[in-house]
Length: 292
Ligand SMILES: [Fe+2]
Image (cartoon, rainbow, N blue to C red; front, side, top):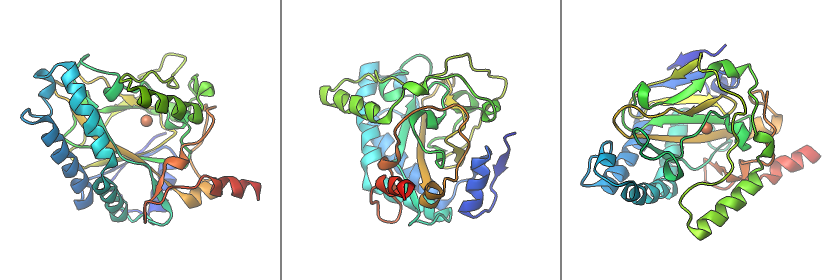
C-alpha cells in the first residue's frame, strides 16, 4: 500500500521511515524550494530568450533546441548557487547537514509530443533508481519549475512497490556506465546510447499515478519506487528539478527501502556531496565498515 502524505511536519528521520515504507510525501512551496525553482527559471529564461521557455520548442528546430537545452542543464547542475540552494532546501526540511549527502541536482526538460525524447531529453522508461545502482537508503526529491499538469508530469506505478518486475538490472554496472559516459563526452556524442536498465515484461498501468504540482512544490519518494517520465501531451515543455539524498547513518546501519527485484552492481554513492561542506562522499567509509 502506498500512502500520500501532504505537508506533514515531521523530523527527517520520520520522513525517511515513511519513504522507505513506500509512501509518497508531498510538500508545498517554501522560501527555499521557491528560491531553487526561481533560480532555475532565471537560467531557463535567459537561455531561451527571446522565446517563452515552455513554448520555445514550437519556434526552434530540434537541433537549435538541443543547443540551448544541453548547456543550460550543465550550467544549472554545475553552478555553486544551485548547490547552495539545495543545501538551503535540506536545511529548511530539518535535515542534519553533516549526515545528509546529495547528488548534484538535475534540470529535466521534457518537450511536448514526439519532438525529442533522447539525449538531453531522455524519456526514462519505468525504472527504480536502484536498478541504476542507487542505494536503497536514497530519497528522491522532485520539484516542478513551472506548474505541472497531469499530462506533463512523472508517473508512479505504485502496485510495484510490493510486486517485482522482471528487468535487465543484472546487466547494469555503475562503473561500466560511467566509463561509457566519459567516452561519450570525449567524442561529443549527443545521443545517449548507454544501456539503461529496462523492464523485461509489460508494465501494468492500473496503478499509474501522476502528481501535478506547482512551482517549487516537492515530491519525496524512495529510490525503490517504480516511476517513469510520462509522455508529455500537454502542449508545453515540462521543466522540473530533481536530486537525491541519503543519510550516512542509514547507509552505515543498512536502513533503507526493500529491494525486491534489483541485481545491478556498483554504487552511485561516490557521486554524492556532504550537504554541510560539499565534500564528496568517500565510498570507502562504507566498504571499510563492512569489513570491520
Ligand atoms: Fe528515476
